[in-house]
Length: 86
Image (cartoon, rainbow, N blue to C red):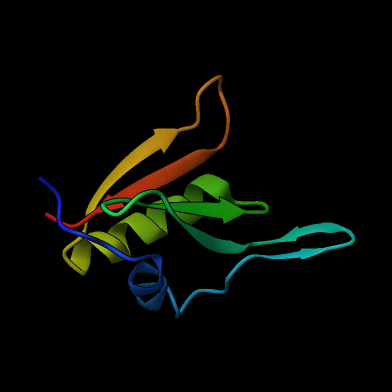
């Protein structure tokens, strides 16, 4: 069973990259983390370059020892990364 994980710890690994930010014109490109229960964090890339951003985040998080599973929200929704701790 995966260990407890916190969104702030995942965000700390991604600090070298810009966080996403909403403006009146839409999303400025960047990452966003969201807690999904005690044992999972989801990572999204908002704005243009979604797949490239997720690929970059996946490599960074795997290098930091996290288990990263690419996923897509049901019904053809947003792509995201499920992050857990082994």
